[in-house]
Length: 401
Ligand SMILES: *[C@@H]1O[C@H](CO)[C@@H](O)[C@H](O)[C@H]1NC(C)=O
Ligand SMILES: *[C@@H]1O[C@H](CO)[C@@H](O)[C@H](O)[C@H]1NC(C)=O
Ligand SMILES: *[C@@H]1O[C@H](CO)[C@@H](O)[C@H](O)[C@H]1NC(C)=O
Ligand SMILES: *[C@@H]1O[C@H](CO)[C@@H](O)[C@H](O)[C@H]1NC(C)=O
Ligand SMILES: *[C@@H]1O[C@H](CO)[C@@H](O)[C@H](O)[C@H]1NC(C)=O
Ligand SMILES: *[C@@H]1O[C@H](CO)[C@@H](O)[C@H](O)[C@H]1NC(C)=O
Image (cartoon, rainbow, N blue to C red; front, side):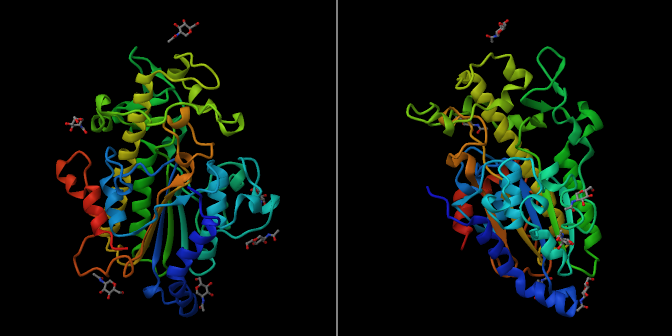
């Protein structure tokens, strides 16, 4: 499939096209009562392995529910399957050729051009703009400040437990702690007793509560870390995916005629202790089949954990009666190969790494306006068999757009 040529521009156009009239009105009269808020949810390394994209195995009832009220894009592609270039691209609405960022090592404002960002545009038009978690890629590519103060009204929030992501916090079969790729944890056993995405959800809800009574509309960006590696998630989510039900990639072989330049040797997962112990041959592997199943199991479990965080956030939006006045966009910076073509990484240009979920909920447009007391986003528990009601087939028939 060929990616459409100008995704970030088109995307920016769609967002602004949907709400620009409101924005202008807010800026002119400064009566924010009619201006819509914006909630932008950015997930890290999430391919469209979701019920709403037809995945039969993955349990993602909350994102599926959002999709059922949204305009859902089937062929959305990242500009590049690397976090920083992709994020800088869609947050500035410019291609990597223009931002001149293909890696992690430069800040566009000094390296290529002083381009405005999407949140900056809202900020300059009367919005309070807020960043929670990983929105810009950290480091020099956002000037070690998530592009503050240009993009954000307040200093961005980062969860305190993020610093443990790559440390030895995974309890191995030997009872010791390791820095593993596959890291289902007992919440009671991890430092600070919490995980980054859980903290980000709590902070985002706290901000929504504050903004509920604000005179200005808000633009809140929430960046989730999972399913980015390591697969560090509450261990109960593994139960959703019994190993015997996990299939392998349908095309697990490195293609014979593949030019070396098109292949990425997945060095980031090789550094993890559990992967190192397997002595996997560089660059092509393969990874033993039982470990392939475990990687896929943990990616899907991470997606379901992420889905519960999105569910908590959206149900809070409902409870605060903000769902009728808030545009919601959900996307990811790029995908991740789960064994297709012998790959276990982002970085390549195969569909599995470049294709992303993309959906827009616009109250009064993708759904009718809410009636008094109506809830659009009740929290759905992936462990609850009642959420089978939210089956993809049912969802698609609900999706009128
Ligand atoms: C870059 O843009 C920002 C925000 O529009 C502005 O405050 C700043 O002065 C600009 N910097 C340069 C070097 O032009
Ligand atoms: C609207 O409010 C913004 C931010 O508070 C302010 O900068 C702007 O000048 C106001 N516009 C008008 C037309 O009052
Ligand atoms: C980047 O951050 C540094 C340190 O805070 C600051 O001095 C510099 O002005 C920032 N660059 C831009 C373009 O704002
Ligand atoms: C696993 O597969 C079996 C056999 O197809 C099925 O009955 C069961 O519901 C599956 N379990 C889960 C959790 O999907
Ligand atoms: C990996 O290599 C080490 C050192 O050569 C060896 O002790 C270990 O048994 C090997 N592990 C596997 C899974 O082959
Ligand atoms: C939702 O918004 C519309 C348009 O602003 C309004 O007519 C309707 O009363 C609102 N519904 C609720 C429950 O506030």
